Amino acid sequence: MTTGNKMQVDASVILQEAEVREAFLVNRTLLLSQQVLMQKQENQILLDKISGLEADLRAARGEIDGASE
Image (cartoon, rainbow, N blue to C red; front, top):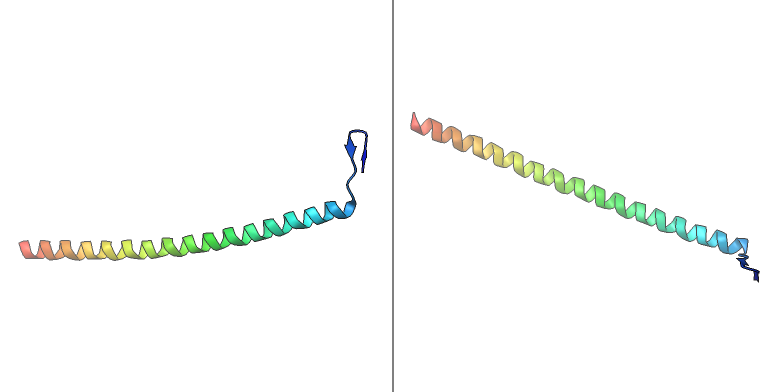
């Protein structure tokens, strides 16, 4: 399958390699989108916790301010 320094590749081999690359890219894209979704969910959980802690802090400061008056 070689002529001189050039290698001839059957078209079916090239097509198969392209299909394998495409499948890899599809799977990688799906994995990355799942990771992004999980990260968004984790970020929302952390934002909710921060909001709760900020509310607790405001309430505690209000109690401290109210107690000192």
